[in-house]
Length: 403
Image (cartoon, rainbow, N blue to C red; front, top):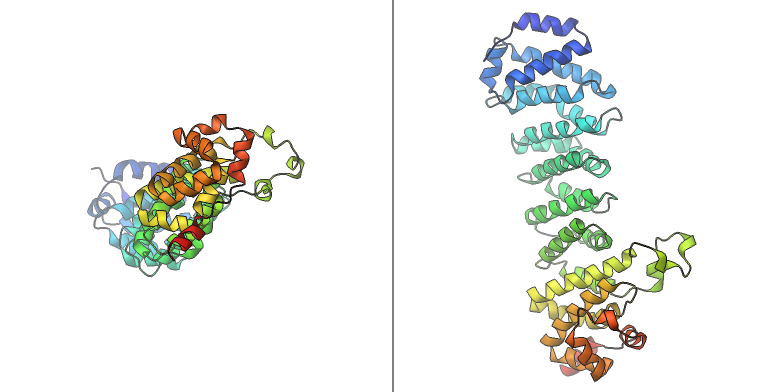
């Protein structure tokens, strides 16, 4: 490992232009990447702190105008990442390094490519333990990182932001609920990537906090309207996880509600010009129809995993609403997913078979059960009307049978 003439380097730094300092930083990064604390001291002839002091001072003066921010953060990361280098961390914290790094995330002058490096620096600080995680959180770090994740257009930035939030939740009991609530808030982001990452984060942090926040249910159900398969996948996995917790009933109630789409619901969110009879000309399915199909699909998954959930859904009137979804000629996927769920219920519970057969009539019922996942391709308008206008009431039937 080569060493430098420390005094000359510091003089060049003090008197140099921005480009001169950038050249010094590039050489330092190339020479000292993945080195230890003792290596740093040897490189600077036991004066490594003198360069760190200059580096942090320049960062504080220039980050608001975006001058070589990524390069400076990368150089500071070398100090903090080096083994046996906790004294450099203390020096960085003493000059407000955490606050500066967090401010970089929200500064207007910060380029998008600089933000991942700032987040990686925060991750390094988290690795020092609970005390330092608390310092980040006390500096309103959770809010700054969450806003960065929500607003960023870069997946690299978003992935790094999620990684820091995950670090802040683990082994940090004072602030784990704050991180949990941040992930819940991110479910309402307009960014599909942020939605996906929020759900991934919730699946892990839920195990840490254990007790679910009831405010998560509605934004979670709203994500079933997403056209992005990765969001749907994560939402489904999180709902499966919640079945073992005390928000289960609330989640199931909302899933059943999603199966019944009124005309008013189907018009929500559409421009006024589309509130006519030309809805069929829309290329993308309406969000409430996507949600309806997703709810039916998730119900199919849940009932095959738990008989308790199946019985609870019957008490919530799921059969009536599944039949309505099966008759939604405007969205074939709703019909298909509802048909699959109905087949399981009919084959599992004799009371469901009895009432559905009565509602549909034996010929239609026989035809339906022969191909529940594809019958929608050949249903007549009369059959569709039978499904949509059904009066199947399993909860009342169960109550009557129990007397």
